[in-house]
Image 1 (cartoon, rainbow, N blue to C red):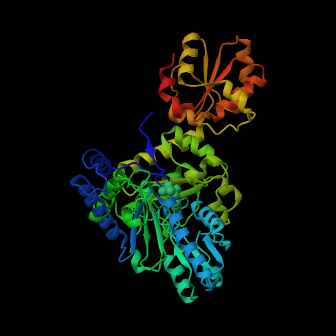
Image 2 (cartoon, helix red, strand yellow; image 1 turned 120 degrees about the horizontal axis):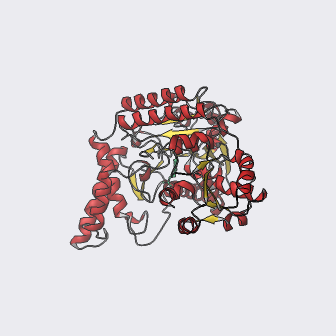
Image 3 (spheres, rainbow, N blue to C red; image 1 turned 45 degrees about the horizontal axis):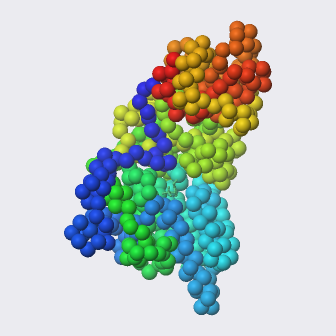
Length: 515
Ligand code: PLP
């Protein structure tokens, strides 16, 4: 298969070369503990300080705190814990506080889950209230105006990870100011870094968490901005690192890598300009419109990140389009990576009040600000190829039974088992049960493979049974459809049926080599 086109940057990004080099350097030569007072430690401390200084500059942190964390989920916990401890303490002093925890209906799950968790653990017993959004994903400011005076904390993300919708933070700030709200304000800024201009200390925002792996740094490193004067309670205590604000020996490799990304942001030149990104997104949107008749976009382009497109195609479920794009070597997603395993309709699009079919058919395509014109050219070509494949081989709808887990496990082949079965049975039939359009865009993984989509299996099984009972080996993209194929074959009396666990995604090379 041709090279992989990665268009799932809102889930995570590759690590940029300079970040990789900085991480290796920090592990190999600068391995000191920044708390040590000898020269090796002092060198690590110097690196830590310089990355923090760069972060302060890029975020416009002013007099605020900037802490290194393990990622945004930790930053969110710290912010929520800090705000709720302040509310609890104020109550203990007999002061009046708000009684609501307000969060945008399209927030990442980490936000409502943290609010509920710390509210329960601290016994603050505030009421969690979802702040609704309109059909464009924008917070309903008139509802915020009504509720803000009662809010103890307000959480409104800077930009949504599924749709790319950019929140009206100035509008929210104005409502909080005009309503006299004393609520602490957290803005999950994960998707904003590198795509929107930040000048945090010039705003009323109290807490802003960031995550390195969404912008070319590795997983396991992040930042938390805390406004000067906003309450702060450490999430972890121990050896006093981060000036006692976040204990635990620092992740120096991750911090060094994040430093390289921040340097690139500060220096300019590495990342595409906003106008270039808008142009790239426009080209992808045009390619989608040409390839997929009836496609609708689920966010307004002028109020969303220039790096995200969320769309639905009538008659095509998210999963079907994802499978097709994956077969064409294009990695996209149905929404957030955390919920993609659940295959449920997008709660973000549901909150926007979009029709059920659009929530169940949504596909997100996202790229990073280092995207190149060549990547976009190739993505457009592959989108066209997928459209063509769909026209030539429309989807056959699946009709195979859902397998029971025990049967599925006992008939699953891992790489070694697949190799020995094929060595013992050169007559085994290899059946690719993906849709014909997926098969067409990726091509057969080896000679002799038959392509029979799930819905057409019953009519083939009879013929295969009549011609003898050689082992049948089903495979697909991930192993889900091939497990259903085994269940179908067994139900129809073909017991010598197997499937490749993990599918082509995990066994591409083994399947090509097999036999
Ligand atoms: N907030 C948003 C908007 C995100 O997209 C993500 C990542 O999926 C998170 C929070 C959680 O970030 P992390 O993976 O760094 O914990």
